[in-house]
Every structure is written in C-alpha cells, then in structure tokens.
Amino acid sequence: MPLERILPIALLLGSNVFMTFAWYGHLKYKSAPLAVAIFASWGIAFFEYCLMVPANRMGSAVYSAPQLKGMQEVITLLVFAGFSTWYLGQPLKWNHWAGFAMIVVAAWLIFLD
Image 1 (cartoon, rainbow, N blue to C red):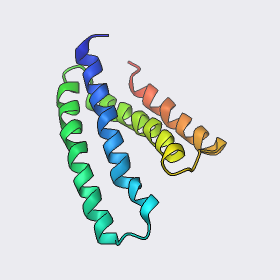
Image 2 (cartoon, rainbow, N blue to C red):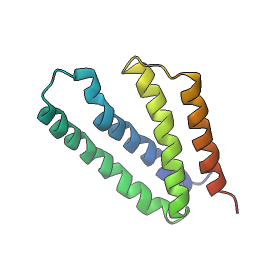
Image 3 (tube, rainbow, N blue to C red):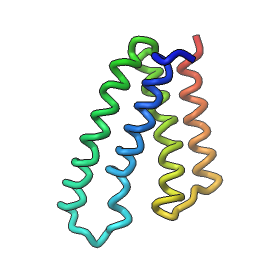
C-alpha cells in the first residue's frame, strides 16, 4: 500500500488516541472540577486537530470525504475499545461488539463502488 494511502490512516489513528483521551479520560478523575476537565480536554483536543486536519487534507487526495469519515469511525471504535478496557477498566460486552460490528459493516459499504 503506497504511503499516500497509509499516512492518513496513521494520522487518523494518532488523532483518535488524543480525542479519546480528551472525551473520556476525565471519567477516571470524576472528583476533579468540571472546569478543569473541560480545559484539560480542550488542551488535549488541540493535538487531535494537529493530526486530524492533515490526515483529512492528505487523505482527500486518495479517499473521498465519506470514505475518510467511515475510516475515522472504525478507527475511533478500535481505539475506544482498547481505551475502555485498558484505561477505564470497562471491558466491552457482546452487545457493544455487535453494535460496533454493524458500524464496521456500514463503513465497509462506503468503499464499495
């Protein structure tokens, strides 16, 4: 697979790691004030944007916008599955996996001609 196809995927993966921490990382620190959680999340999200914007710019040369969005959703689910289990200690149940699988099928359909 050529670099112009792989690099956007790698950047999307990195951006989703940051965004998952921005959106859900504060759940481990529920005693922290809400304002602190919000500002910390904004700070983390900055780095997500530093990866997401180039991923979409570069990726649009080889993928359509719907394909980029479909990939992003699947990557988000994979990152979240690991994050939920590893960081939050909340492993996914069968129904979570089944729901995620349906989203993966939906994203796959986007790539069909």
